Image 1 (cartoon, rainbow over the protein chains, first blue to last red):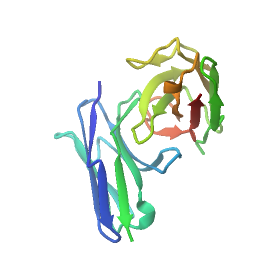
Image 2 (cartoon, one colour; image 1 turned 30 degrees about the vertical axis):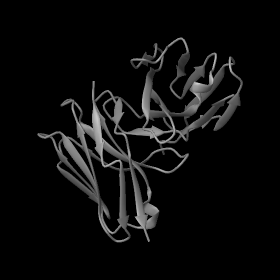
Image 3 (cartoon, one colour; image 1 turned 180 degrees about the vertical axis):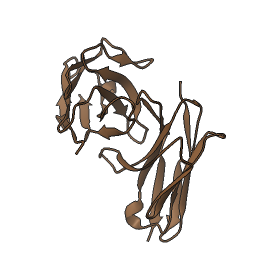
Image 4 (tube, each protein chain N blue to C red; image 1 turned 60 degrees about the vertical axis):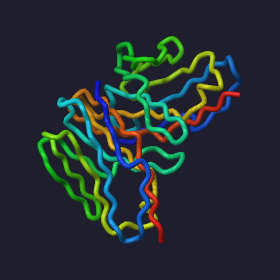
Length: 111
Length: 116
């Protein structure tokens, strides 16, 4: 089955700096890669996603890149703000819709 | 659009009893729903895939007789934790997809189960 690895497990940045979280996946059949933000006790919230036919996608301060050959994808958050502090999960999904999640990254943005 | 609800949002039960959690797609039909379990400070672990009108597909290590899943309609899936034990205490989250071929999942708000 699919295996998703996510790094780092914790990340602390100063407000205004950039944050990068990286994931690798193992199953070449995976074709959809969402990123979720989860606050304590809440549901995961989709913040950005990318499909396997695209190399990069950007939405304001958030961007995701995908390297299909190397089977890795990354989340980039620029101009971080304290409200960006949360746990971020990457996931890899196949056409069947079943997703495998990374272990999560706890992002702390210090004011 | 694409709203998923769960009920209850939290529940406390005694060891040995059973608890049912409902997952509903409010404004769309979901042929497939997924059930996840999340322990504190851990990731979401897929328990099973629930398809309307057919038996659920369970992930390795998940006991199907303990976690009963029923997907009786295109808008409702239920997870019943039978003979609950304290180690079953967790955050249970469901998700639904709009249609086959579209991977995006819509998550319910989760159910916090505490077994005493």
